[in-house]
Image (tube, rainbow, N blue to C red; front, side):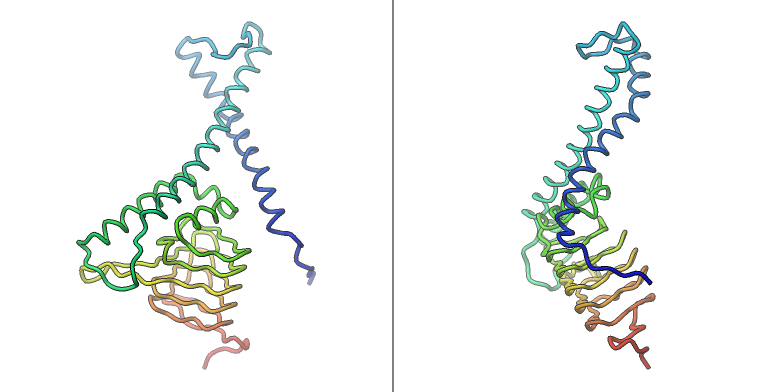
Length: 253
């Protein structure tokens, strides 16, 4: 088995690579759009709008490429701006209330719904930006408390104002974290707290009121019931999730 030392300045390198990769994605999107752009102008019998002459094959291809790349970079810029603005609005409008039960037909519900609307708007592009510092920034703008080195590979962190994610936490793809539920005609708000170095598996679901201890593991596709306390170092899995390994490595009796 091969092991190694953790890379120093990993987060810095990751952020730098993100800043490099996103424009590359934009260029790829633009280049693959060239046939569609050419078809559009051919179908409508219009000339290309750029200043280069399209009288030659080379000039025509250059103009198409310029349009395509510009559109691709536009899409990436639009997407990142959409996510940031949505995060700001969700953070401003999020309910600043104590955990508890509130009538479903109340101003609190309306306020909560508005903040969630902006989260849904962010979902147009957010799935393409996780994990990255842009995704983490969005969640922080929305009100989440996120520790240094956290890797969030899911666009489904809901109710950010009631979610705390510790240092070096890893949240797997498509995991869902909810700090709310509705039952018996009430909106129930309860914070979710995830301790340092915890692991939330792919496609797992964390319900409101859960506390996950330091270094604990929630297995892939596990469903952690509401108000569950997972002690530090334990491994939980299943539906509903229960302890499958204690912190000392032994199995529960």
